Image (cartoon, rainbow, N blue to C red; front, side):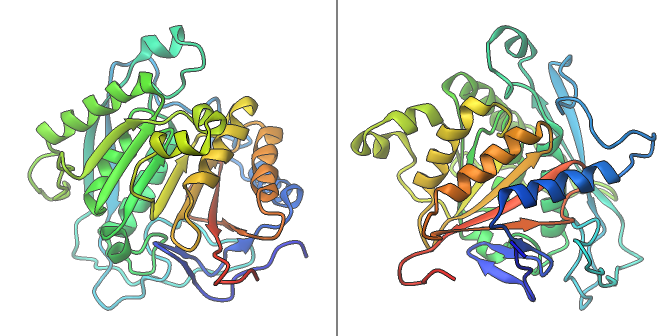
Length: 343
């Protein structure tokens, strides 16, 4: 076997790996299993599970996005496989979750501005519109946090004390909805997209999602002091000297590095990997990579490149199954310190 399965949850900083996670040591095997599973899953309309590029609606200037937070789990119930994990991983059965039948399902509504003109006129600009991966990941994480799921992918207490850095944030949707649960959230993308991100942060700060109701969550918008939007260009990071690199990245190291739906163009893979490798502090930074399964060769190239950063096994990469519905892969990366040793 080229990968091993975790017998029990493994903690890597703010991230708690589900027991069905598998250690990735062979990119070919991992990608083969991902695309075989994708091809086997038939959508309700009879399609093979593949969809287009994955944006929500590139024709609208403003999108109203409704996130289903679910029903909070009953106090004292087993939260080991609570909201956010829609199906078990390979060969693993889900535990039954006790829910509170009297609780009312809650939702969160946010408004996100898009720059549909930039999508068509600015070469290589894909971040100016909202993509399915960000919405689906946001909903899955929020469901676990809303349920106070202490066994969720992100530990709520650890997250509340964490500095999160997001790469390739696009419109800033994840920053808007996740920042309230962090100590500080630094949201980044290329310089051209930072104004759009700041507009969306300001829009949702000035017009919070409303008072609690039977279906509305008591979500608090991110305060201006809790969230920072700054430019960060992966190509600049890759080409910069060691001295300049320190000036191009946030001063405070990340406890959690989010990379959601950033893997799509082969030319950007080397600079993205260089940026991940540089920002990840050994023994501190957990890296969460969410990729929509589009071009198989691009996904394989990224994963192989990530493994190649670790000739002596400094990087530990895990595959998480069942956390998201849809055509996704989730990988968790952790860089070992010399004191930790390499297993």
